[in-house]
Amino acid sequence: MKPSNQAWLRRLLGVSAAIVALAFAGYGHHSAVIYPHLSYFHGSGETVYIDSMDARVAMDCEPPEPARYGNPAPRGAAQGNSTNANRTATSGSSLRPHLSCFLMSWSDNIKYDDEIGMVRREKYIQFGIRRDWVALAGGDSIYANFFRQRPLLERHLHQWALVYPVPAGRRIDTLVYTGSETAWGKRLFILKRG
Image 1: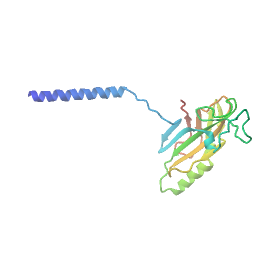
Image 2: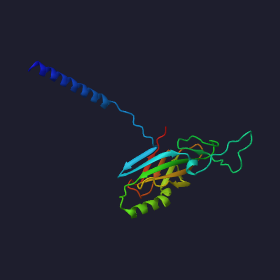
Image 3: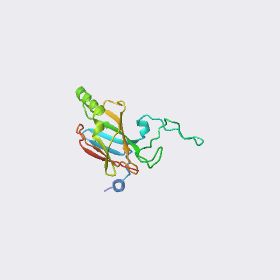
Image 4: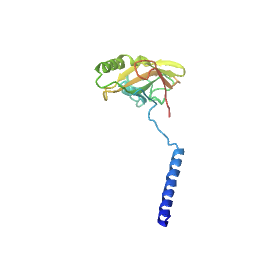
């Protein structure tokens, strides 16, 4: 073999060995995957995301005015205790029951030309989906006491907020979907907390 071919072959083998070594080094390294959602499911062409949301935003309430100069808050000011899904109090005492709110996004798999399916889906979201979501907090089942649908962002992307009253000293750790109107059926959504 000619010396120029030997040098070319050595370079090729050296570069190949470096590529293989980098591939093995990358294969053994697991990069951290960060999911910004509390829970997520994708299956049968449908996707569901569950995120935290301030209950006051969902219910379109103003935060209570703070007491000034030793005077109590004005009458009519909201005195409730609201939390976001991470269980941080936003107002009031942490010993009282609080509200926990979740923003849910659902991307469905209905065909674009299926108008009857879209009307049926929209009717289900407006009137039936609230009763199909149950929150679990310390072994207790809690049903949502407030529901607000957001306007359609896109034909197949639906969003709504559910607000749950949570007993003092508890936090919602699981949401259970008990309905059968979706492609993903009955399912537990275990919430990831930071």
